[in-house]
Image (cartoon, rainbow, N blue to C red; front, side, top):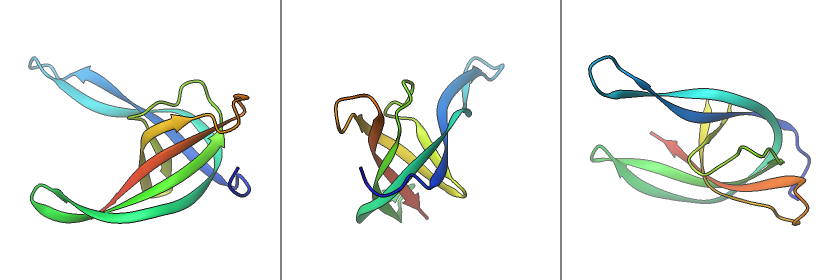
Amino acid sequence: MTGPLRHLFQHRTAVDLPDGVGGVARTWLTVDRLWGAIEPLSDGTGLAEERPIAMLAHRVTVRAPNTLAPGDRLVLGARSLEVQSVSDPDGRGRFSRCRCLEEQT
């Protein structure tokens, strides 16, 4: 495990709701609050709407909820981390280790 679990993350999952005109509107529902540790892994760049953005990769370790999945978000204050993958580091189901991407514009 990486350091003490001293950050309180909001675990959010996407919910698609009808928009009233035949489409859907995506909203984010807070599922849980999780104590965790965050560790920077790497940085890079990408394009969003044809403008450069910084992409930061992080490893986040949290107490294992059964509902955390790729595509969810972990929110820490004003920071939003998109969960890319979830693993069980010790095989005992106590913790979840996530690789997350943070977009900086």
